[in-house]
Image (cartoon, rainbow, N blue to C red; front, top):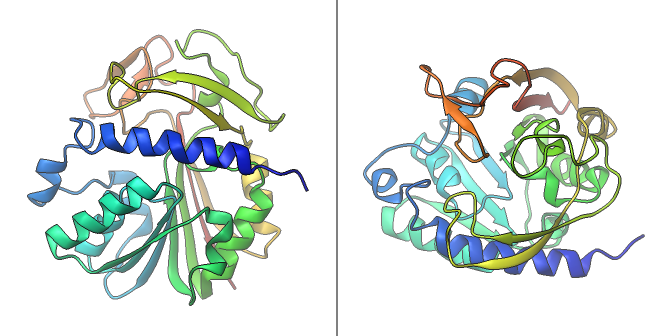
Length: 266
């Protein structure tokens, strides 16, 4: 098995830098969130449904804003993330808002060595699977933590989006997983002019790879939805529609930008 530790360590450092920028950005708008606004989008709120009284594990939770939004809706939540800075921020937010939550800092692949139990819901969203080289290992972690009858849910940026160059003008990257992609970065999607520089490493994953990794664990797909818009303004050359969603200018209604999957463990 290939050793990815150097890539994971670089990504951990990159996300530590990003966290320092993200928590103070208008993009995440923590002030509004602390005053009761949810950070969850209409897509996952509609498709996950009522979580009151259910246990929820949030994989790759960043600094816990979405995790704690689920807690506000009545879920018993646990979040996991690779970034120690993000997890420290998540724990601080939980304490500040008096929302009950548990946060674990580790690589998602290693979570079974750091956390016990099974959950009614395993959740992950937006910009997550691209940091993982092996989705079969990821799906095994999902299956490990799901109760029988439990729901896995992912809302994620569509792999077509990751084919574009940074200016969203032409296809640059392969649709399928063709190995590691190294990126040199300045700033972040929440603040493109932030004074941070870093290298990170990612992997593109086709829809078939995502779905086959889940069904390979015996999970049963309930739905796959694809959306021609993004709930976030995090790509270049976006325009905001009357519905509040974002599309790439000139490609409005032409390309998919987000997909979601719900799967059940028999």
